[in-house]
Length: 378
Image (cartoon, rainbow, N blue to C red; front, side, top):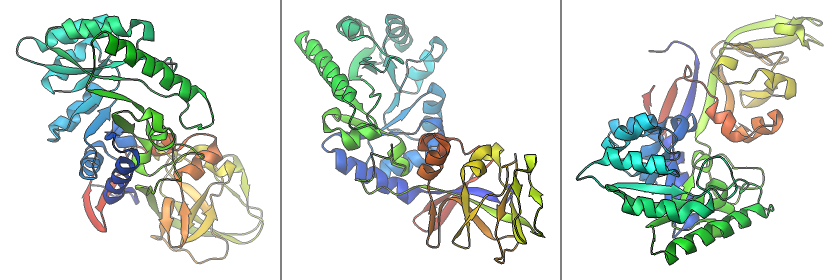
């Protein structure tokens, strides 16, 4: 039960649409929908179902716990865990039939022991081609692959890497990473080790770097209709899946030379109407958004945030327009002819769209829509 007049509308039809477009764009590669971080703030389970309906065949998560959530919801698709699980997660990986990334001898031995007799666990060997976050150096790949091949209960289902600058299409480093990855695959082939799946592409790679697609593309941010960068994404028909909405909770008319919010950084220059909106930085609206020109939509019109965003509320300068308590306020998404995007926030705040949507907090209820019909609220 929720009483607070703020929510995030998630359009599951948009997620399914985006999955279908990405699958078509990257074909013949198969689509893995990345639903980590609670589906980038959209809700992992509903998004996973919508992505699978749109043509995704795989799902990917960051944590064992995230994979367990999908299994407990009855989702049976292959689930890739993107980092090697910690030792206390090995048994659960096996029990839930997850596909873990591996890149150490310890991880391989531990997962093999957890698998025991009568279980075959597909694992994906990660190659560090230059991201230098996690993964095995290329020089160790053959030895690790042999260890997997010889480990009871394990099968080398995939070999993969991750691109560091695929969202910067003119940077030659992506081509170098693909070259290193291809060389590692060639060494594996020469050693008689050929995985069923080879994958390297994230959303930006799938869209902008055909050479990175291989057998599978792992699409996260594009699945939610947010462009990977200003340079990548416009070429694919993607639809934003999230609309962040609140309502006007209070209206007041202020004379000139009055200040609004903490720090008194906004001062009225004329008689103006100030609307208070029941959402703030504890919900994922950045505190400094007003300082960088942040705007919202009320009545289809862009209106500036007035003064510092507070923890639970923000204020909006509505000028001489009539505004009432209960009026809809759109912080992200469309209203009438207006549109505010995650990319716009990211540009103003010198960040990325990923951080914007992932930052919408858990106390903002999600309302799910398939087409025009509202679904469950959580």
